[in-house]
Length: 451
Image (cartoon, rainbow, N blue to C red):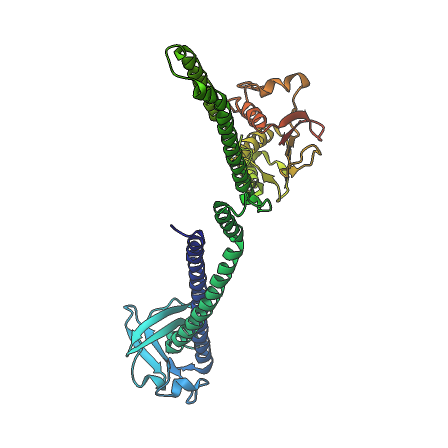
């Protein structure tokens, strides 16, 4: 027998571990990126300081005796720099090295002119280093002198900083995880308290200490307790009925039995005894029989339609770019459509496509949620209005175009199914479609309301 509390606690703990793991991973990646960014900024600043400090005389790179960064002059430091030139075959010629290199050379890298190029975690001389190079051309009176500045720094300090941060994050996540588990235990105990109370009352009913469940349970279990109370009432009534039937049976048999007791069994009374026995059988059958006789998706999730509607309008603008139409599209970003996204795209696409085809120079599209005052539901109807300044639609033809396959102008591309599809979608959502005159001097306006 498993415990519901234990099962919920295990599931909640697993979800919590996954959630904390994701948080820990995200924080670690963010901090690692920050550390790497700091390393790049540090190397970039060192290159800029070197450019400011060095000079080129007769094609030779001259560096000052005392650099602005002391670590470049310390033999046991973690910062190194060198300047070299590359020939056409990318063979380096060393022009200058910092004293911290101790006659060593960093692994040469080629860089794009004017671009800082960073490389992390390079193995060099028993060290893991981050390097950055910058290729420059130094302008002199004798012409431009190309060379590459390379700076490297041991990433030990950055790794130590990262590991220290990871330990701190681990400790804090462990602390918060433990605290949340304790809160979950308290929450589950409080949430399952009605079930524990119900279990105790079941035990009391079994022991005869109570006859019914309490009526003040939460709504999630109140229906169950009500049904159980009805079942207990039925069982009690059935038992009482059986007692009553058995009592009636015993009372009904008293007289026949008394008669049988007073009879002397002889040939003369045999017929009468049989009659009395038959009457007893009839009564028993009757009482036993009496004892046996006792006894469209209306809940779709709302989707925001502003983005997909704007995409449809943008696509039609590109398709009809040669017409140079002025399109005004206003869509409330909070509008929710309670239905299939494909239905809205089909409805919006067909109405807007017709407007773009027939418009002379202007198209107006407006989408909003309206309150018709006759629906108690929180799902407010959507109103879509599309109008153009085309030739318009005659009043006697406005109902005709909603029929399948009907087109008013055979010269306009299309199969005549669009408005029929619109009509079917509107009907499926208990909506209404109205065709009228646009706000321009000419043209048609389609107003669609979806419930």
